[in-house]
Length: 394
Image 1 (cartoon, helix red, strand yellow):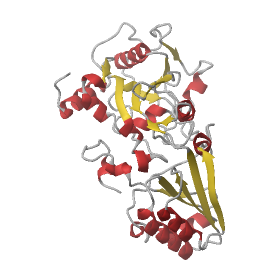
Image 2 (tube, one colour; image 1 turned 90 degrees about the horizontal axis):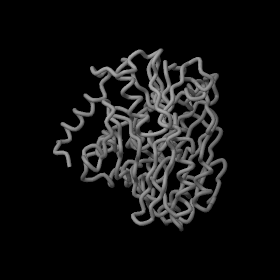
Image 3 (tube, helix red, strand yellow; image 1 turned 180 degrees about the horizontal axis):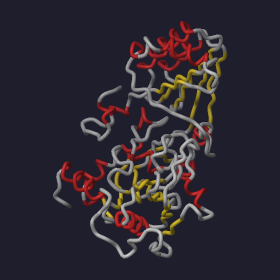
Image 4 (cartoon, helix red, strand yellow; image 1 turned 135 degrees about the vertical axis):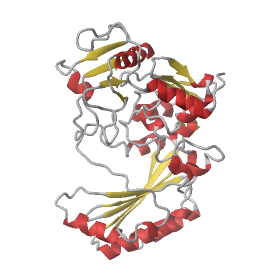
């Protein structure tokens, strides 16, 4: 095992990824001598027929245009792409699922390393491990693991790539009971900025850095290994809708929701979703039977709801597929407004915000607040994660 401290490992990786790298490769002229590695990668220019499809990400609002796209088919292809970018002073963007809300999986006039065709995966029953390439999508992963009655704690949107989700932390319905996606990550293989293939089995500090702290900042991950967890037999959801809203009523509903959520069982997740004309509160539960604590919360939420959807119980895979989201690209703008511990954190701004939402011509505006807590925090103690919010907010 390499004898490196955490600080030394990160410094080495960051230095290696810096572009440009001094050494030159034989394909140093970008527009006339592209490297050819049959079976490992191919390049697309803006004039090529497949360029638009490979460039497209989930958010159609992002119109960045890389000069080249390297479509990688193997680890060696990723190595070649990075070495080419280094030799030609090209900034690198990395795309696996392409679901980044702000388009960080694209760039202007650089090299896009497209990993979407690296999407093979397998489950090994002997150690209950799941090994995957970065381009696998969550919908495929859930469906595959369900046949073994296993899961990894990931998000709900079917079109999200497993690598981008994991390397940024990975939050979803299972975070409160099983932790973030990266908490189940046990091994990575990564190509660094010099085109070298690294294995976290040789340096545990590399694995630590990839648990929420490496969305392309340290290198390009080409393989991820996870410990898996038993999948629940069923997935239950409840919905409460509130209409005829006023700013004061919205504030009261928010205050009550915040007061109830500390008692939410860790098998549950909740979201508070406010639009211009309606508030929706969603609760999901992985438990086979709802607990007394959950029943108390459900009764409180239902008191003045306009409509109440009682327990909708599904077999596990069908249950999460109800929340798979859209898979086709769309126009949108998402903004993170922070992390809240109590209603007082938003009390002064919520009424005015709702009033602005009502007056806005765009009727699709939403404010969504999701629950954290449970294993999202406790599962990481005493380790220090590379994600600042985990040690700060409950």
